[in-house]
Amino acid sequence: MKNISILGISGSLRADSMNTLLLKTLADFLPGHVRFQLFESLDEIPHFSPGIPDHGGVIRFKQAIQMADGVIICTPEYAFGVPGTLKNALDWTVATGDLNDKPVAAISASPLNTGGDKALASLLLTLTALGTKRNDESSLAIPNIKLKINSLQKISDEPTIAALKAQCTNLLKIIG
Image 1 (cartoon, helix red, strand yellow):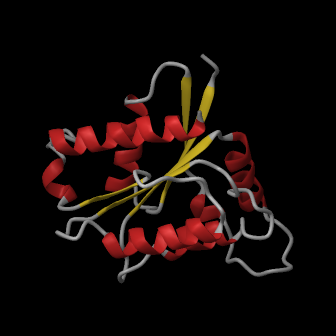
Image 2 (image 1 turned 135 degrees about the horizontal axis):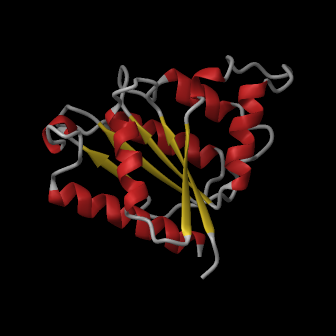
């Protein structure tokens, strides 16, 4: 089997982010020939403005995407949308097409019953505009996330674990 690289991007900057926890959990479900890297410098990316030269944080973000065979984005929902920091980072890739034809999985997680469905819908629109490669199984909304994490800060809900594993399997299928 060929070695595969997956990049995880969390839409949350919080140290105790459930979305980052989900990405770290996903890494455990990937086979041995898959390397998982979590991009942890979203806060170093300046506000997007066309014509401004790429900043160090932007360069690192774009390079991480370019080096990855696939990307998994996990986001919370802020005010019925994607957090501004995540949208801003994705906007930096519009002109260069770094995500064009890149296999991507999109996940939202929320303490609400809706699972962050509005953030997920917004993210999927952005990913469509960026030309990512996805299929009908490339997205997942996880409702009531706080009830699915145990006192050890581990995902303990079996249906959620199964859904996360299915996202990994699907992304690897799209990567080929």
